[in-house]
Length: 352
Image (cartoon, rainbow, N blue to C red):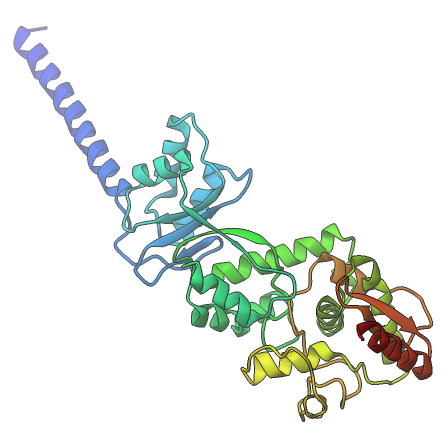
């Protein structure tokens, strides 16, 4: 073979190698860059008002699984390139919630998720909190605005998804301590709290699937009233038994908590220190002093004790209860009205 032919072949091979390298470089640059279109919401991926995205990586989730969700949301351009990155890097992505400035390259995004660095805000939603009070807690912590949270809690699509028979998620957002990023999408906040609620039902051995959406809604409504009535945990099931007995007899529940809900949440007034005759005569469907049966919906977020009590009330013969020790919050339970009145007289004597 002539030397000239050898050089020609070598030049062709080098040209081919350079061409392939240039092509590979071009494809890498193209697939590494973020998509040109604005991301859309997807499972575990939310889009903020400023265009940034919030990504939740589930515990034990693989990089490929997360990549599929990111691709569906329009955050990454190529699931194939994401898979290559996942195989090249030996460090796993870490579970958590990440707020990402968009646009972001795939390489940079993969590095962020492997590093696991998150800036989270811890909040505690107390048992018995209403949607409005929860919204105020979230806004004060800088997580999301109260308005956006309340709007998300009334979203029809979310209500249908979680089989909520009411007009809001009141009662279905579990009171707990949460970690959220600042400026977190309100819809994802609602989803997180609703998912926690459903998981708590499972932990309490409550078979939610045995109930229709309307039947479950009634139980949650009852639990919310119990939550606002009990103070000693060992009395919650007994209080639930009293309410169950009154419901079965067609009696009014006469729960002060439902009147307080009307005053604070519907009328927007300060929480009263005591109720007067005029209060228990308020004409409102939530007033269980003038209306038999359960109110139209939950009045607060019930915790584990109240939920367990509502689904497994104590089997007793009591029809009344009233506080006899304000400091401990313990109640006196009675089977008839005369006993109930006597308990009130004893309390007055003690206070004197």
